[in-house]
Structure formats: structure tokens, C-alpha cells
Length: 114
Image 1 (tube, rainbow, N blue to C red):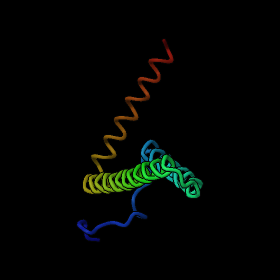
Image 2: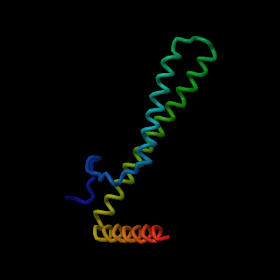
Image 3: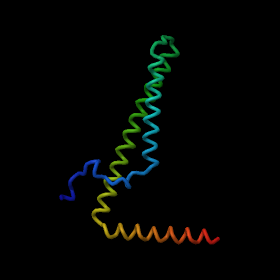
Image 4: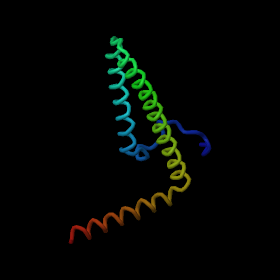
């Protein structure tokens, strides 16, 4: 397999995704959905204040959509970079993971004995 080939999102390891980034993107999507529902409910109100509120909400929704897409793109890009490094240096990666496991185990044991 060619190392320089671009990998599909399906081949990315699950470990490369962090829960906080995933939750942030999910929260943004919920916020966008709620905002769109609010915008639809305001569609019948013809007052000037409602028009200003709709325009402002629409701008904020577009900004949130763009931010969510950028975060998702950045997360996928970083996961691909991490995957490339791990594939390029598998023994180093295993060594680092082993070392971190030992360190966490020692710290946990020391804290338990205090």
C-alpha cells in the first residue's frame, strides 16, 4: 500500500477521535438545529424587531455551521496526521504507549498508598 495515499475517513482509528471534539461538534449541530427551528417559528412574525432578530439569528447560524465544519475538518486532519505518524513509527508508538501505561500505573499506585 502506498504510504502517501490519502486515507478515507473509515480507515481512521477510533482512538484518534477525542470525545471533547466530537461532543463540541455534536453540541454545535444541536444548537444549529434548535436555531433553525426558532427561525422557522419566527417566519410568520412580520414585525421589524422580528425581522432584525431573524437576520441576526441567520448570521449566527451560518457562523456556527462554518465553525462546526472547520472543527470537524481539523479533527479529521489531525487524526490522519496521527495515523501517519503511528504507521511510520509503529515501534516508537508502542514504546510511548507502554511508557505512559507504566507511568500511570506507578502514579495510581503511589496515590492509593497515601
